[in-house]
Image (tube, rainbow over all chains, first blue to last red; front, side):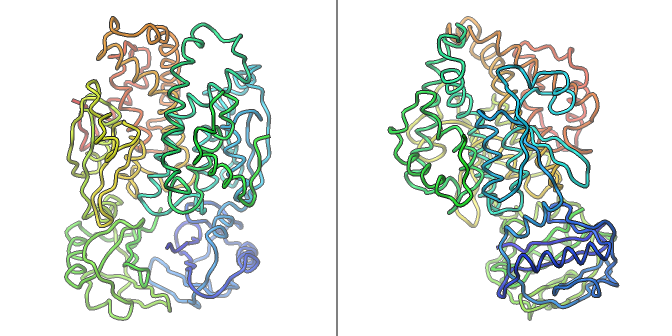
Length: 307
Length: 307
């Protein structure tokens, strides 16, 4: 259970909206934000995401500008407007906190690292523009790309345009984290959140370098075109990839999801390369719990496929 | 700017303690917690960390049990105790939120992945017990280790004993996240937090498999003992490791820290294998900004060395 907060800018005052009984619709919330914008206020989401408007109000004249019940807490005490219980889903707060931002995904459409970000956005109903590069033609190693988008010469990169200007966020799992921050896809419990990151680091260290690399080498480069050094690694990557899949299968034999009782970013980032592992000649029939989990994810509302 | 919160259990009421002017010492806070425990209350940190005591209070009879100013918000409205400004460092809230938990680090003392967790705990003043394994003797692949500590057969694993029982958290960077949750080592701004994770994923994907692996192979296994497959990878790991160090050096030439204006987990996890990169025959003199950053970290209060 958490108490979502929406804060006014510069911390002179903040507004608290609590979960509980009763009902507030998204339209109700939008009226609050529109009213705030008209009154020249700036709103922030729980972690600093801008909502709308641009000026601040002090706690002494809040009550005339809001169209919903609220409680206002100034630094010099507590001013009560109309404190009542409100109820809305976590997603609503999250959408509010991303209001006014536009996202561009710099991607290669064949990369499942890029697909992770598209799937995260799709499951959350977030619009995402796409800018395609062909990594096989070196399009992410041009001087322009290195100078502007990512000095590491890699995709995906999430471009975020908002009140803070245009910013670039490399690393697929970090971009998923940004998009999902404050949503149901990230547990708020301290241990569950760390445990989700545990599987996300496992994905980058144990899973992706083996399962994704074999897919790229075998399905997109072609075994006959591999260097001798790459051919020498095929066996080690095969066994390490199978070990990663086996660990996942053993976990999923006892749990529907990697963390808790619903989908989180851990499922999304592991799904990306797992569901196409057969392109790297892994045999998913050997991992029945993984196959059932893949079906669960593909049945989610908002799901989008890699291709 | 954030408003740390301490909540009472079961969400019937919560207590808010705000940053601002004035001063509150850690002893003051301990008196609050002791008073709460004596009154049979249970306190939680911002993300659910237990503090002390075990029973709840309702918002209607809080004021007689607390020794500090507070504001109490019940589900049925707002009850004001003595709302005043309090001021204390973020660390204090974080210590409170981890109160009552005991940590055991399952580690190999030569592993800088394990050292990351010790350094995080040391910089935050957190006590940490240590349980040593020799990975070169396969001590993390025994049936007992696989069944109880980590089915992935790897260290580090952070063992957490608290009100929720004993839990195990593998993956070094996830363990650092757990320990540092709510502290100054993790920025609260949404973009900065994702950007910190970006460097932590970079560390696991681009840095550790090259810089750490060459250190282990050359300084601990010995080049003459490597397999032919390992010897065939030396060149690729050397150039990939140098590329990772170059990217870091270019960033640090313009910034004192990887994210924002102070140390975060991004610095800690990248420091671990970077500062001993010369054991893998990387030449740190080629990266002057990295060398200055290493000195900054080694000068931090609470810093502990790898050995």
